[in-house]
Length: 105
Image (spheres, rainbow, N blue to C red):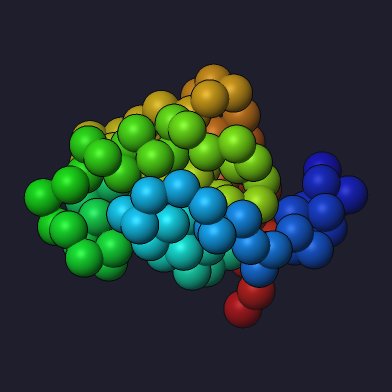
């Protein structure tokens, strides 16, 4: 687990937001700003991307994320729980727990 945490830390800040529609790029940009060990809801991320009513579009952007360890869509949660994740809820839960345990401060 510590090795995975180290790899995730190294990948933080790597950018793949330069392709796709403008809203998709903005969502990916804002997703990369979510600090290690923290999470936002789809609604909160939509607001940060400039479209507060676009939480479903944020969910679609997360679902189409080709590199979830680099653009951390696992840090985006549903209002009522975990929400989806391409690799399944077990992976999302594990990644969030790993980051929370290794969170600075």
